Image (spheres, protein in one colour):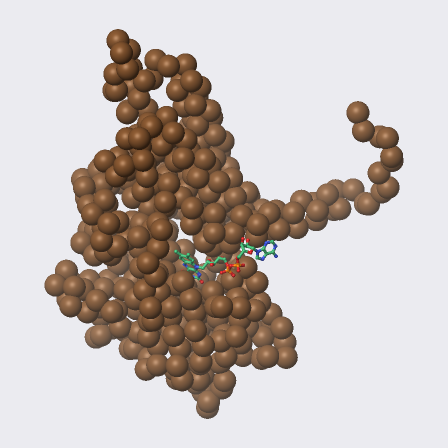
Length: 417
Ligand SMILES: Cc1cc2nc3c(=O)[nH]c(=O)nc-3n(C[C@H](O)[C@H](O)[C@H](O)COP(=O)(O)OP(=O)(O)OC[C@H]3O[C@@H](n4cnc5c(N)ncnc54)[C@H](O)[C@@H]3O)c2cc1C
């Protein structure tokens, strides 16, 4: 499907695919088993520019469009979703808010390190009382002279352990509801100082000034995305310099909502990649496995299953590329991003389980990547807004559109077919 893709997009995608085949695929299974963060792959991705695809060149990125970034995440996810989410969380959640809402000083201070993968970044919104209800933030920031004293705990934060630069939300005015939430850049050293030192990336004490009282907590032992780092991010009496306020005071909620809109296209791309990876495995396995004098693929039931999967995947590709295209055109994309995320995350679940089904017991073992793909797919229906939250977002948009296009009028009973 090339309606949305230029020759340049296709060439870039090819490069990412070659990279993933050479460096990601061979280590994915082991990293998943060991729940080990793939530092070596991260170093290579940093060198290739994959950790700053949509970041302008003046801030150390590749300066490519959002579509190129989505293709990157999609392509990586075909081979390993943990690697793909490392790129996605770092780019849209780590660098994204600083790029979109930061002032020039903040951009120059952090983006060159993030975009080249010298340090990893993340985003802290979720708390025990805040996630789906993003306005439920309890983390509190209190002015202290020019600075802010911040206390709170963020949970399930991607890169909270390995990363060094984060944007977090905190309540600056408890009386003002969501308009009393602000966002701040906070920093801490990576937990893997030794590995980062040996590999040569991940820790930059000479460039990043770490804030006392910011640290990571317990590492999660997860069903999927096992090689991605997920932990608590704790703010304990952290004195955050006034210059780390990101955007105007009270704009944190809106900033985060916009960050998540963009992030959702990334999760749609990641989900799409998972579905495509599972589909490829299923086609190769069934066409290469003998069943009597024929192959599994010769069974019409298998062909029907694969035909339906291919159709489902094509629909997801249209939704995802369309949302990315809208963003690249500077057009509103919030509804389309939610639709792409909702559809593709559920597609990833359907496609990975179906791939296991057509492959039979082989698909259920770790001899093939589909069982890992299925475990990796589930979180796509939860992270960066659950499926239910996407439906709320879509419903809000479609109602608004309906009321704007035509004033409300009574629906006549019996006016149906
Ligand atoms: C591996 C992983 C990585 C993550 N990375 C990050 C990160 O980097 N940064 C970050 O900030 N967060 C991160 N998260 C958190 C994640 O984004 C949230 O857990 C997710 O958005 C769900 O929010 P919640 O925790 O409030 O869940 P809940 O809202 O408590 O979800 C429980 C259930 O309630 C449903 N529900 C809640 N409200 C409604 C409603 N109004 N209507 C209908 N149903 C509803 C949900 O859909 C869900 O089914 C991560 C989570 C995981 C597991």
